[in-house]
Length: 226
Image (tube, rainbow, N blue to C red):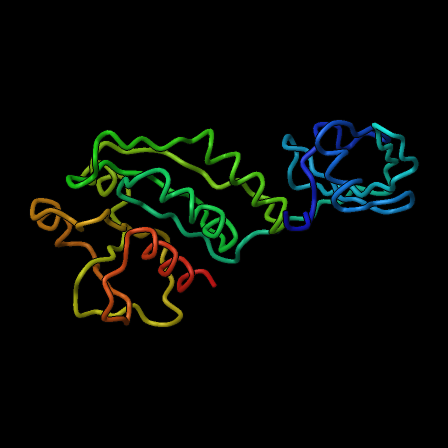
């Protein structure tokens, strides 16, 4: 397990508290923390505030900490990107979700496109657990948002400024800035969907390779945000 930048803790903000169970094992047995070491904690109810604590005592089954300071310290991407992603296998999403979180994607809207398999359903609770672990490792202090749409038409109606990643002559330029991008599932968009999207700005990446849906999301997000 990689080292954590901060830890989520429901007691963060209190003057002192004790840590037991799995977190105790991780901090003492794995990370080898000792008395006098300093640890950063954030409370999910006030994630913007970083609370710094000092370890005051370590017992066989408990670790005790005392607060040193608290300060508002936000870590977030300079640019927000809202990804509209045609639904694919949830396992494929899980493989890249932490990376998308580290890159700084602000929101993912999952859409049942014509070629999405209807039995695939996003597991938002599992996604949130992945994001919490990712936030602690990369330092991010904003939770990525999720929602779901039944079709592309509903999403485009609500967000007409959406750009589209698809086969075209136009290559995405370096330094491109936009708020939303639509990326298809395996097999791309249906003819009906392409007709619907013909008024949207369409682009591709400068590669001759055919990208899997999850690879496309990573590549586009990286190019726009980083």
